[in-house]
Length: 234
Image 1 (cartoon, helix red, strand yellow):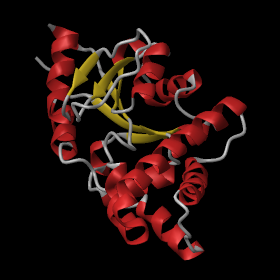
Image 2 (image 1 turned 180 degrees about the vertical axis):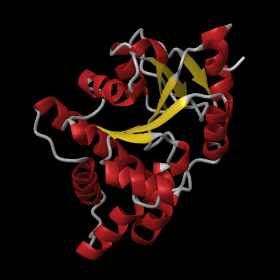
Image 3 (image 1 turned 135 degrees about the vertical axis):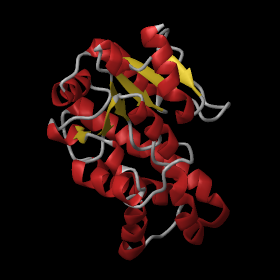
């Protein structure tokens, strides 16, 4: 029983970095600069990238996500005492434009489309950066559109960002789901009145103990569409 037969359009907002796109795909590029420290370097770079976006959102001192990524790279190279030339830095930043999708993404998106869900990419990244990334990963055509926080000069989990998504997608919180591997994003969407699915690909992944639970938790995007249909219609 798919949603279109019930007259209840369901909109899915897919987070991009860390949910559809594997940000640790940069590890291979990092290995030539930091060797075996590449996984730790990648992790701290990603943590600082997010931290800087949170801080800029709270301070209302907006710079786009690419700037947060660049500043975070500067911090991380200093932390690890690794000298990166301007060319090295640009090469690493360019990797963020061509990161791979997770293995479950294409089939998971195909199933969501088959179920009749309206699907959008919803990202902290600028629209042009996300368009490039999704096209390179071979998944852009699954989406009706890309909604970027850059359009309102703030970042997730500002509640205004989720309201902006709903306006752009022509949806309401009651019929819209955020899909994300990032707990802060899931909690942000729930706090803004949306439903939310936490993608827990790793058994070691932890959800923040805030007393707010995801509407659904799934281990793979392959399970997503079916679980949302069960929740909504049965």
